[in-house]
Image 1 (tube, helix red, strand yellow):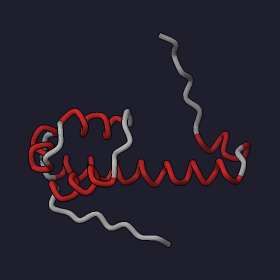
Image 2 (cartoon, helix red, strand yellow; image 1 turned 30 degrees about the vertical axis):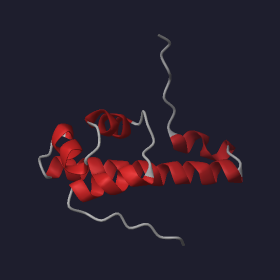
Image 3 (cartoon, helix red, strand yellow; image 1 turned 90 degrees about the vertical axis):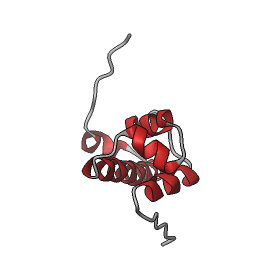
Image 4 (tube, helix red, strand yellow; image 1 turned 180 degrees about the horizontal axis):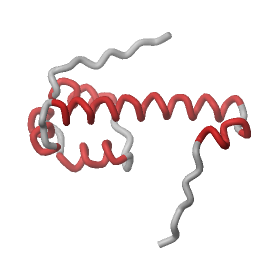
Amino acid sequence: MKKIKKVPLNKIINDLTTDEKKIVEEEKKYFSLVNTLRKLRLEKGFTQEYLAKKSNIPRTTIVRIESGERNATLNTLISMAHGLGKELDIRLV
């Protein structure tokens, strides 16, 4: 397997077009949301299995979302938030 070299985003951001920068910003927002869900899960002491049962979604879905292997659907994010006792607030700004 080929090893991928990691490059900090701030080293390449200036080489991106305006449209590419917007895409990066949207990805950062999504990652932040997923990271917040994971932190809440850990703070509550929930395993991925327990959250999956409370959220009525497969554990493998949570694993893939938290690892970045899969983007979550809106319904999945809402289910995860409810399983954590939270509401997902989405705004158009």
